[in-house]
Image (tube, rainbow, N blue to C red; front, side, top):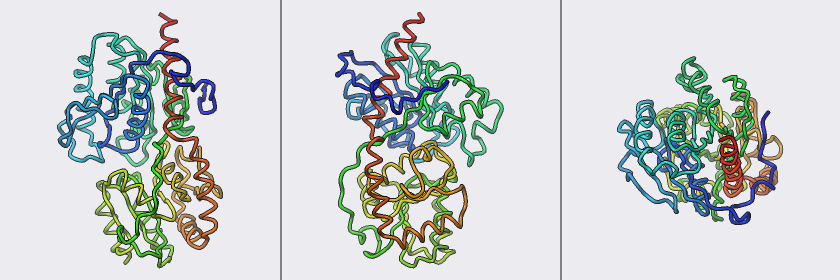
Length: 410
């Protein structure tokens, strides 16, 4: 049986409202900003929200000159060296493997036994074994948060679902955790569908920080003509995101005023530039690289449409950010985004890799400014349920329930 917190508002009161004492929470995640992508970003937002009422420590990776210990808006961030990581945006297998022993060793010196009330482990792979071991060391419950790609990533040769040994390891972690959380029906479904685990799994939708209200940046600052039809995408430039396909769709649309604004960096950047040049649209494809949150928001505020050709998303935080800025969203139907995106309301949600339909959707949104405005208004209203304070309330309720359940069984 699976229980969903998504509509259980009565369970989501804050500790202050209920007169409860604060919790001592240990988050384990191999990535934390500025390292990594969406999973680290949302966990950081969650940690910051909970740190307003609880004592929060994060155990994560150290690379690229980051400090071993820092404070992030009342969150104590402890970083362990992983040595092999040479990019902020993308981890490699050696760095993920190195995190496990380093996190376990450092984690045992974060406090005496009983120093924490609960461990929240993010990503079954690679973080899972470290979080489970530290929960056992501190004799507290472990809440395992799965994000999608740690169970199933069709673009990766080493995705756990492809290998018997990794499937066995993930299955053991899913069974051992005191509670398991998935952020979408798609991710929750993989627990049983791929790993054969028939336990209760909570579904708590992810949340984003409320973006600041911004006027659109002057398009000239972004290298864009003032009258351009601007399609924006945000994300790591890796195979799973299939950003090259976006470039090809822009070319196939034959919309001469259409420009593609790409926010993010990664190993696929040279392929994207090459594809744009080969199609003769290099002057209409703009790679901004890794930018600050403020610059990302300015890019979103300057666009007409948000598009993603990602092959799978566990949830899709960037879709929520686009909705918050009133952008129609164009994407495929493979992943957790189908929980909150729907064709005709939020934009276009298309069958995976239906390139013709994707191209026609770009043309449709290019040609129909009123449709864009209507979808934008709908998205601004719909995104209100997906800000980080709602996610934090749901996690807090689950932490308390899991602690009480562990206490009652002892």
